[in-house]
Image (cartoon, rainbow, N blue to C red; front, side):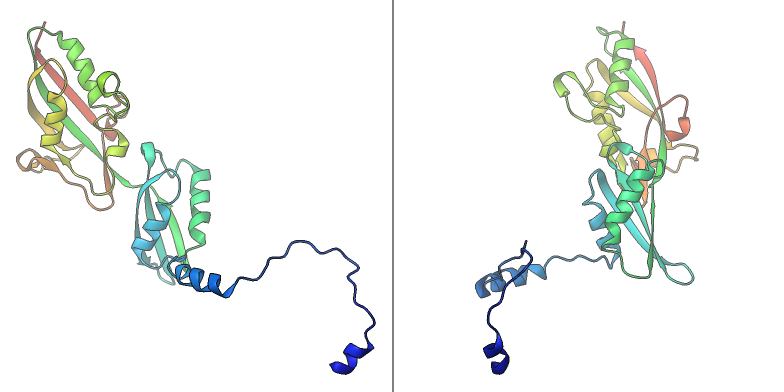
Length: 242
């Protein structure tokens, strides 16, 4: 009040001030305000949850499905990590990703993070080797080309055909792509497809259809580990050569 102002002799601050920020100018407010509303920091739809999850380091793709679980909604988030790493076996990754998604999750919605539904493959090929090459050398080259690592030599740095990052949710395996990869190996004269199907299942006409399809939550897998054939099995019958 005017009376109080006249009664004041002086004003001082006994404690030092720190921090603070100058107020935004009206022109800055006009520039920044429209952009702020374009940044969505919430997850409402299945696509929103997948989009936010894919921003996290190490996540190749994600698929979300919301289900009513009796008293509330639960968001089931399947995560395909780069390099085929497991979500269930990495508690630290799972906790960190859950914390990241908690910022966007709707109140009252539970969140469950899980691995994809992996589909192991069963493939058998009969390969005819050119007369000037050793069959064992061509077989080794084929196993490397159709492996899960990275290629060397002229294709150094490229992913092998069955590298986990080459397949994600819903990605099909086309027979033509497999045959092309085989024929690119030096020493291969021809190739015949003997088995081309899901592992542990009865063949469902995949050779005739020339494709092994995958459902939206499925990821095709071919580890070709003799100790774990249930993770995919590749057999090569080599004919001809030296």
